[in-house]
Image 1 (cartoon, rainbow, N blue to C red):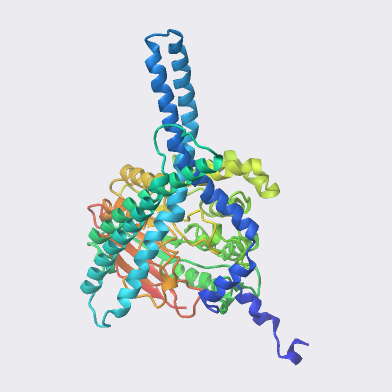
Image 2: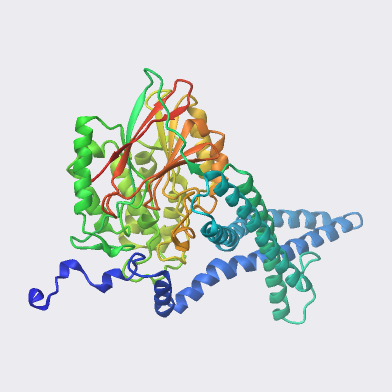
Length: 565
């Protein structure tokens, strides 16, 4: 019947393009989101992610000042009333224990507002201005001119957003009540206005200060540029061959299409299976030391996709023994591949389920080789086996907190160097826990992971390192063809991460994926390698990189070998 009608179900139909940025414009996708999104879910999400942190932030100064006023009053009574001393001690103790609970809540509230409001506003403003400025540059403009333009635009964006923050503070000023205890108000509505004004003013103050700081930091930091030259390893230097893959987007159906590409991309996993065969032949001809996959192993983090990945890899045990995988946003943050308007609530168990699947895949593939703290990943996960299995089976909310804490505690994962001057790998989780993008593509590296990097590099001071993550630290120096390619995908705190890594610049090479773009460059002295997707587009292929220790504890990045399909 299909042949008579001229239809072949294996070729898909427009439903397979529901979330495709290749087949549909961003305006069309936005229209679908607005029409189909659950308004009740959106309201609850905003209440939990924005309104509640804002209330905590706005009420905190009033509560703290009221507590301090009470303490001051009791201190004044101590001299004339002996019983006040005991009351004062009790009050201080109560404040101490209450503070221990309130401070973490306030801290999380501040970071939630920063991640949702402050950082995206600055990044969006900077990238819009850069995009417009680069479009008017002459085609023949040199790299120096483009770098100077990027510096100027970053500084201007910081100043512009800072001025915006100050303007909001001035608007909220008449309603502020930051000090003086709980104010005498005629109604709860007046108190709510004061709390809202406090939240707006404090958030805007953070916006003004942070945006100005980020803009100046971006302007003063070395600008990204194409790598000027590859290194030449000294004679006799230890070398390592690393196949760098990314964004495999394995699907769970034989004739399935990808979220982002729809029918404009590949169908099924034939390209991935052929890629593994090509890798196996390369390894047989010239042994590989590592096969590094920097995220988006699956297309939507579903069990069927992980099963397809593991089944395909089972035919190549030599590759599996050398493979390291990194979590990508499609592995852990996807909401719904068929319905981009579906919204996961912050309280939903499904994001944690995708994290469990990722942990299980990493444990099966590299659990005995990589370390989380002092233990291997397999050892770190072993005490939580029942919790993880129970949550995956039942989705019980009482187990959700344990999964969340474990996920945060695992990273960074460390593949230790085999020798003191060998090659190590630091695996980061760069996925921000966001809820308002249908692919949740924002990136964030936590301060905890940055401290883990410092500890690992200090423990093996003679070793050289690959820092592996999914998201790109910087936008690339080449002009983007569309604004949508620049906004909403880079690390939110990429500049901060670069500054943390810069002290180790000569010992590390950063490898990432996410953008499906082939680029090798540097920023602030740090070599950065971006991997194309070897399956999403025809002809991209992948690279085999050769790294070496130059004998002084510095990593040499040799000219790579490009492997075409």
